[in-house]
Image (cartoon, rainbow, N blue to C red; front, side):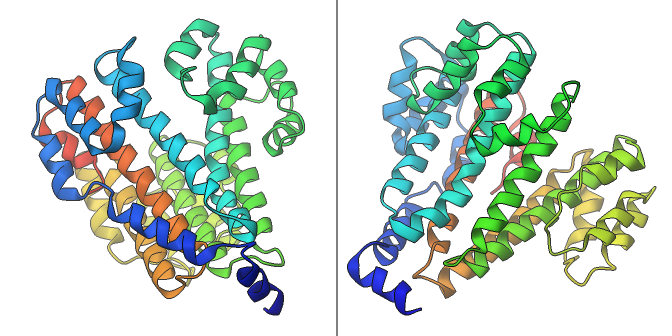
Length: 354
C-alpha cells in the first residue's frame, strides 16, 4: 500500500484526476429521455440531431462520401474509438494498465472483423470503404493486415506477437470462424483475469469480469439450447473463470429444456435469479433474448455504478464511464439501423437499452 500511495503522490498514477474526468464525461452522455426523443424523429433529421449530441466532427468526416445510416454508423464507431483512445490518454501508470485490460476487448472485436472480412473474400476496397473505414486511424493497423494477406491463415500469421495472434496460432488450420471467435473470447477473459490479479490489481474489476463471463455463458447456453446445438458444442462454448463453477455450467450444458437449464444454474450460489423468470417469459413471448440480455446488462451496470461510488479513487469510475459510452453508441446504432429498415418505433424501442 505504501508504494501505491507513493505513486499517487508523485503523479505516476493520476487516479483522482482521471476519475473526475470520467465522471464529467459520464454526466454528458445522452439520457433515456433524449434517446426516446430521437426515436420519434424521421430518418432525414435523425442524423443532424445525433451530430448535435457530440458526434458532429465524425459525421462531417464521413458525409462527404457516405450517406444515410452508413455514414452515421461509421461516425459512431469512429467516435467511440476516439473516445477510448482519449480516455487511455488521460490515465497514467497502474491506472492505465487496469483500464487497458478492459479496453483491450475492442481490439479483439477488430480481430474478429478482420477474420470475417478475409474469410468472406471481401475486397480491400470494400473493407476500407465500409467495414474498417480508412478515415479512422484506429483501423490503419487492421487494414494493413487485410491488404497484405489473402487467407485467414495468412492474417493469423500477420498477427503473431499479439495475444490474439498467439491464441489463433494454437488452433488447427480447419478450425471454423465461430470456433476461432469462441477461442478469442476465452483468451481475452483469461488474460484479463490474470492481469487483474497482478501485484496492483483490482478485486472489484476481477469480480466484474467474472460476472461478465457468467452472463455471457448464461445467454450463450439459452441461445444454444434454442438452436438445438449438441451437448458437446454447448459445453465447449463455456468460458472458464466465472463465479459460477465450471461443474455447474457443464451441467447446464446438458439441460434439454429452458426450465432444466434454469434449475441447473440455481445450484450455484453465485447465480442471481432475481427478475430472471420474468425476463425469460418476455423473451419467449417476443421471440428474442433481448429482455434477458438487458436484465443481465442492468445487473452489471448496477454493479459497476456501486463499485465506482464505493471506490472513487480507482479504475472503476473510468470503466463505468466506458461501459456507459459503449451502450450509448449501441443504442444510437440500433436506432439508426431500425429507422433505415423501416421498423416501427415500438419495435426499435424494444431492442434499445434505456
